[in-house]
Image 1: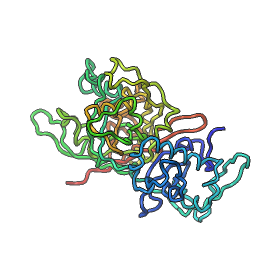
Image 2: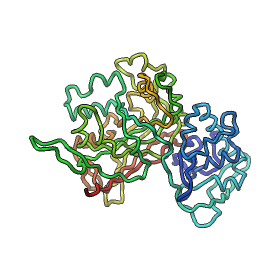
Image 3: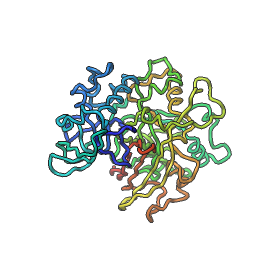
Image 4: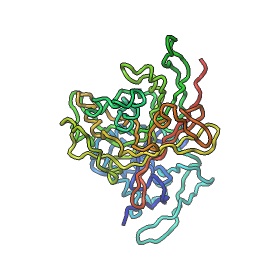
Length: 452
């Protein structure tokens, strides 16, 4: 029988017992942040589970990693601790385990609704099947009326953004340099990246202020200055670094997965006009550092493992330090919606897939450290824009509108790039047999630049 939770999980939910993604939340305004996992429409408060002594395996017994305001301490403990935590949580939440299911006091303290609930303390959360017990109603005494507040789940010390989609690289090169040699020769030999700005990484739902900066001058005129006129989204995902490595000691590509805790959705907003003027010769700066949005839930590699698939064949064959014994991506369906300013409905503008990446997450980690660079728990490694081969699978407006030459029609509104009031929402989901493993949403709305 498939693993099943005593908590009702809707068929289209991103958060069944097979997923259990990690986040950090505040159950009510002003309360301390604490770690949790998503299960259906609820957050399981891991600080309460820890205080109840239910993390009783050989690694986690006595650990305070779930009593922290971020997940960094758990990340630093490595894969054996992650596996023990996952096995414990799946057992606790299963329909056959009584420790949480039959403990009304602990359920009241540890299960917090992610959605607005009806007034009153006794909430019927749904029908749950118990093996051998038939169908019954489970009353949870929840003392919460509203939505939890999700916060950044990790303290991010450093942030690196890669450029790992061949389709995106080819399209960008064609737009800016022409079709003759759109992809630089080095791109097929190494995962290209730049170091981004960790301080401006924000949680989903945070407004993004339209950045100001210089643009490319016309003729002999000075560079124009003002709010960006070519504000764009970038459909990305990002790996969350676990234990990291010592300075001077690279990570072996075949062991790199042990240094990746999980993956989030990421929108690396981009001001194309500012970036085009500034990026020669040192690359992105102010055109990227004004804002990067990540989803609140970190989906672990263990949860993604059933959806592993072969990575694209790499030609030429990578150098030995990038050559993997098993080279894999993950079959994660990705979607981008834009809700134009003043409208109620969103439009789907992109459907892509994580498996379109040319360079794998593990190759990105190996390359990042080959010079001895030390990664640390909580570092964020973005994939770069994930574009597919089809016109409807392009991962940014630069490609979708071909740098503004082919405007999109969104419910009758024309868009070359994003306008003030536009809201962009990413979703990502793996489709299993009778369940999903998803990331929830990653969203942000553009607000006007402040007056100088």
